[in-house]
Image (tube, rainbow, N blue to C red; front, side, top):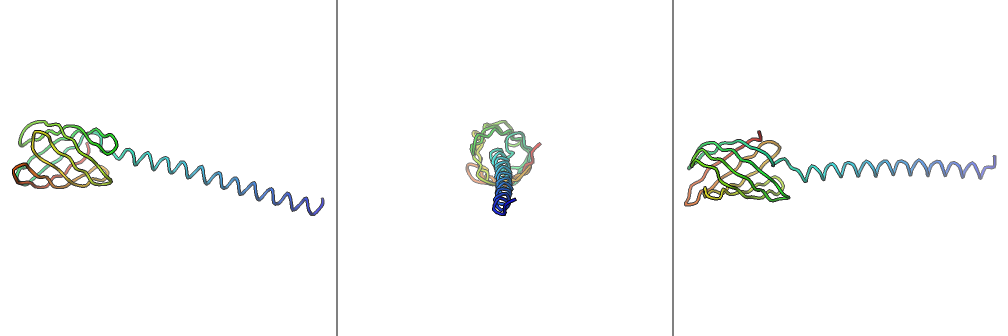
Length: 135
């Protein structure tokens, strides 16, 4: 075999191996990126959450969330003042903000995984803390 053709075959083999490794790396990266993006788009807030609050008012509550992008909608059932109220809010990263229409309260806090907590303020003054877990 001519030395030049041996060199040519070695270069072709190295090029083929390098191209294969590059394709594998790129395809693996796309898969990881797609998984990460899918998880970021669905952070885990939709569903039912149970919690407690204390301060000016104290009791328990149940939240039911629906999420479209950063926008939250749903309902909250409070033990005091007793009743079910529509809620709207937003989420950005680990921060959550929402208000109970009709109950006159606003809630701010943080969430991660299956738990969230923060502060609430009542119309006319007063407030306290709250925490919840996903059921």
